[in-house]
Every structure is written in structure tokens, then in C-alpha cells.
Amino acid sequence: MNPDYLATLDALRRAFGPASETPLLVDIMAKHFGRPGTISMLDVGIGNGVSARKVAEGLSRNGIHVELTGIDPYLPPSAYQLNWPRKPHLAASGLASFDPGSTYDVVNATQCLYYLGDESAALRKLASLVSPGGILTITVWDDGCTLKKIHDAYLAPGRPSPSGMGVSRALAGVPSLTGPSQVYRFAGTIRLAGNDGTILDAILDIAGRGAGSTGEARLRAKAYLRSLGTTAPRRNAIVTAGRAAEGAGI
Ligand SMILES: C[S@@+](CC[C@H](N)C(=O)[O-])C[C@H]1O[C@@H](n2cnc3c(N)ncnc32)[C@H](O)[C@@H]1O
Image (cartoon, rainbow, N blue to C red; front, side, top):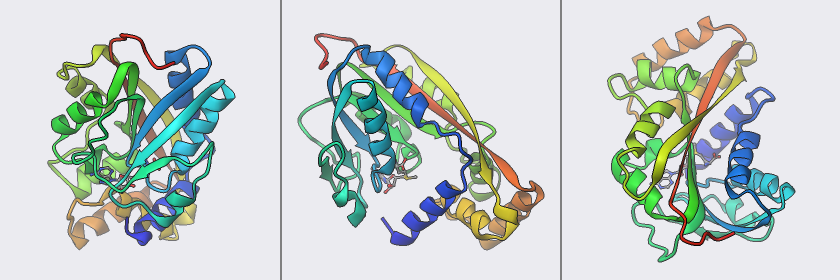
């Protein structure tokens, strides 16, 4: 991963209001397994691993210990320093070429579906990595999210990013998953930090990553952000789907 991108992502995260979707993700996973034990988790697009670690810590507080594997084509050096609860297995790999020869009790993809290429192929691949009795969790920008609005209306017009319902509908066509998927919504805020431009640029960089937008589109998007005042809505959806049990891992 480009170190500038990592720094930008961290700057944006620091502007998030105090509420976080991590407890919701932990709660969903803890309820899914329902009892203490050890589970394997694959985090796709793990980045620097900070959010995967928070999820593992939250599960540990529920008595569920996580054997963590993380993949990302752009693993930053800091990912290799992660040592909680123990060193995760890391692979510098994109999803499409990842072939571990095993499956995982949890497959989690937080804010990376946008980068995985053909969406239905990516969803099928994610589902194929879930163990029987396991769960797939996918977090995306949801309708009403400022990042989604900036992406869809300004930086990638005509190519909207998938909302929670969009991911849920797409998962309905994935044969290895059971039942209807569930969509859990999270509402938070982004502090626009007095509109000094730093956070606005971070929003534009993250929402526009890979969108190939023009300078003019960025200017229009920035003007929209300035019109919002001091805070902007952050909306995420966590979409989950299970895989039928035949002796799950916990
Ligand atoms: C917005 S970041 C999210 C990082 C982390 N999941 C989190 O929530 O903090 C998106 C991540 O997806 C990764 N990524 C990009 N292309 C990918 C691919 N083909 N397969 C897996 N991950 C990919 C990026 O390198 C980046 O770390």
C-alpha cells in the first residue's frame, strides 16, 4: 500500500466521531458462535491490521480467541509488527490469487469490496473461504454516507459503490451461503475540522481511490463538503451471511 494512502486513511479515521462500528461487528460474531472457544478468522484487505486487532480484542473479551490470518496486496511494514493476541499469519496477496487450501470460521472484509475487482466473483471467492458453520462479514459505505455520496455523485458518477442492500442482494445469488443475509447499519460522524482542507482532502482521496476522477470533479466535491459545516454523516452497513454447519470450528 502506498504509505501516503495509509497516512491519509489514518487522518480520516482520527476525524471519525467517538462511535465505532467495531463493537457491532464483535457482537454479531460473538452471537453467531454463541459460546467461548477458538475460531479462525481471515481478514481480507487487512491494511495495517489495527481494525482486525480491535475485533480480535473484542471477541477475546467474549471468551472467543482468534487465530488471525490477514491478506492484502499492499501490506505495510506496521502490519508485520502486529502481535496481538499473537502474531497473525500474513500474506501479501490480493483476494483473487489467494489460495490457502483451507477455510475460516470468519471471513471479514472491511471497507475493501471496492478494490476487489468484479464484485460477484469477489463475493463468491469470499464465500468459498468460509468454513461450514462460519460467517462472512462485509462492511461497506451505506446510503447516506458522506464517502459514498462523494464517490457516487462526484468522483465516480454512474458507477455507484454497493450499499448494504446491494451487497445483500448480490449475496443472495451465492450458492454456498445459507439463508437471507442480514444488514446491520451503523451511524457515526466525521468531524470536518473547521474546513481547513486537510480532512476534506482525505475524504476525497479515500472516496476517490481508483475512481480516476478529474480535478474539476474534486473541486465540485470539495465545495459540497465545505457546504456541510462542521460534521458530516458516516454510515456503514455490515452485511453478514452464514454457511451451513457440518461441524463448525468452535
Ligand atoms: C480502506 S482500506 C481498509 C483496511 C482495513 N480493512 C480497515 O478496515 O482498516 C482497504 C484495503 O483493501 C486493500 N486491498 C486493495 N486491493 C485488494 C485486493 N485485491 N485484495 C485484498 N485487499 C485489497 C488495500 O490495500 C487496503 O489495505
